[in-house]
Length: 102
Image (cartoon, rainbow, N blue to C red; front, top):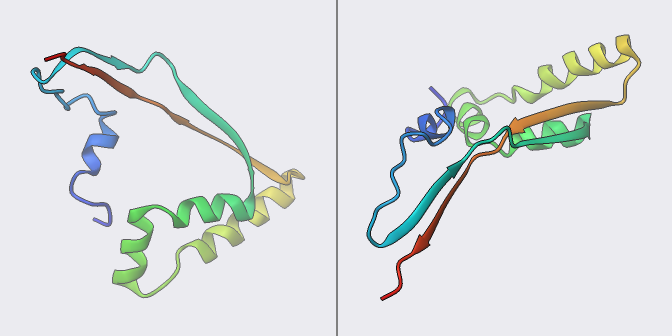
């Protein structure tokens, strides 16, 4: 509801994108367990969430900031577990193509 219409491309890990040939040759899709794994403090994580287009659309429509209750809930859980950082990871997919020589 809050994501742009083409968000499904990300959700499907770009599997439905076809690289046009020509002009491109030697196309390749790489998704061999590539993962970004990062530790973030809570403020950095909330800042990351606020960069999402879905977050911005939610705020625009609902006139409220969902990061406030999220941050409070995460602070509570982090205090219970005695941790100061969150471990975040997300899958990386690359679409590679070489432009054909003329």
